[in-house]
Length: 497
Image (tube, rainbow, N blue to C red):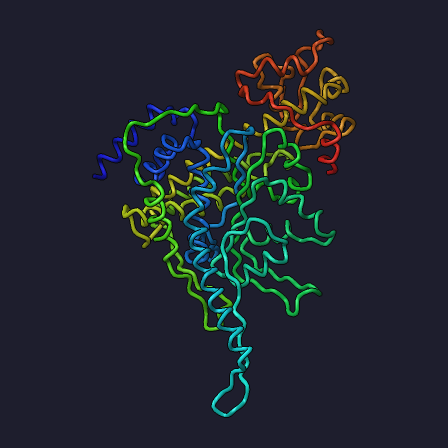
């Protein structure tokens, strides 16, 4: 059975052209691969979105029930912040609703239990409940417990998490609504800071006048997943979110192929995909989340890497460390790279639990193949992140920054480029990405002579704006980059470094 599914998945993957997307579908257990492929076939779901949403849902289902030991006392829950990027109509929302349905059903059961307990509480309060000595007993009001939050104030979100120690997930149709909520409520909104703290696994302490007592979440586990249209990327990649490291904590899903698949009739009997998926996710939800006697502190199951898995993980990350150590200029160091070890560890835990949930592995250790799968997925996500950066740079440079190069001498340094960038409202990070991309064009505009030193290659053609030259590289950086990304007004709000 296993070999048959494995071979069938391989053949179907090749026929559907999935290897061309860059997504390592075979990193997933065979039964989950089959679900992803069937959803693409029968529901017309985008494979890259579906696979990524599955990871988010599995992270939600695990929550604080299991943690992975990364190194020494550094342990983490599997929370993931994820952003689905694409043009309107590409199908970001439908797979989100399908994949999260079993978790919403789980929440429905929690809600029913809450209603029953609250009805009982109200009956007892109205009747008056007394102990054997005639003294009136204090009745404990039941707490509302849920997992998935679609729209809530930051205060309510933290209150919900306090009562659900397993963890919560923010599902937002448009991620900008979440980012902009810091302005919607009040100037003292700490949502972004809370998300940064939660991702690092540090306790959340919320002290507000509106609360009768402080909210303390010792082991936060918050997942975030939402979508954004390509033409709004510049609004997401604001200077404030780059500077505080929020975007470094997100995994981005940005499909290479932006074509919407046509509908097709199926003559074969449709499999019960939802029931297959529900069985897997419910098994994960059944993993107990153990609390202490007071019910305020979780005691998660700590899963360590096997010896060969840990050796492989360390070797991989040491390669990143060596590359960073070789960089002389601090400005050239990408902070995102230093977060990859945490991303990989979390994904390795997800893959190991998925293997257990599909009867293709256990949870005694995080095995090497789970670490390998996690690294392959991170490579995929980092490639999509790189293409997003290219999209932003190509559009912002091509449309609004043509004056930038005209401010530079024929031979210039990266410092000169940063100074010139400030004059046309380009952030430091955008300047460095622009330098890199302008060197990589099919017909390069500039050439890197040595570290931090460049020279122009097309100075004799003063009438050729960046837009023309940049448009000539579309074969290299995807036709999807023709999407227009905000105006110069938006760009001004992005750069205040």
